Every structure is written in C-alpha cells, then in structure tokens.
Amino acid sequence: MESKNRLGSCEVCGSDVAKYCCPRCEVKTCSLSCVKIHKKELDCDGKKYKTGFKRLENFTDAEMSQDYRLMNEFIEAVGEFKMKTQRISNLSPVSIFVLQYLILEIIFVRFQFQ
Image 1 (tube, rainbow, N blue to C red):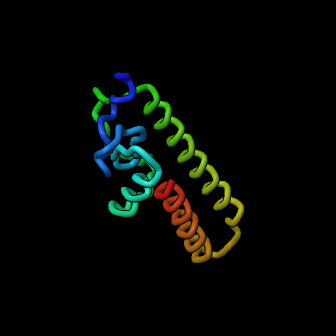
Image 2: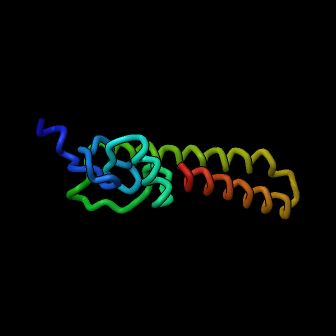
C-alpha cells in the first residue's frame, strides 16, 4: 500500500491517489483526464527536457546514460554536417555559407525539440 502513496494525492483534482508523474513539470496526476487538464492549463507537452541542470548529488546512472546518448547524437550530427559540407566544397563560398547555416538550423531544431 505504501508504494501506491509514494506520489501523494493528485495535484489536479486532489481527490485520488496520484499514479503518474509528468516527466517535464513533475505534476502528479491520477488519471488521463487529469493529465489532459494539467497539460492544457500549464501548456505542458509532457516531454522530458533532454538538457537541463541537475546537481551532482541528484545525478543518477540513468541520467548519465541519457547524457551519454545525447552527446553521441550531437557527435553524429556534427559528423553529418562535416560530411555534407565536404561534398559541396566545389560550390561557391556564398553557397557553402548558406548551406552550412541551414544545416546548423536543422541541428539546432532537432536538439531543441527532442
């Protein structure tokens, strides 16, 4: 019974025991309807931040693994960028600059919304 109460009561309706915790804002909810209410009222998408500050004493092995994967994704994106720019090296400097800018925009958007 104690494991069911570890989240406390629902922060939306307050009447039931919470079963879910939002990965983004950590609001505790008891049902799908409460999840939907919390997402609408707080304008929350429910997706966990891939980047964010975490104190070292609160840092877990799982978070270390997630950070490692994120860094590998970044390294792969930089590798893709280098490979694409090498293929187009026979273009004019202005064209190369524009393409590099567009690739950086794609990389930025990819990591910002994951």
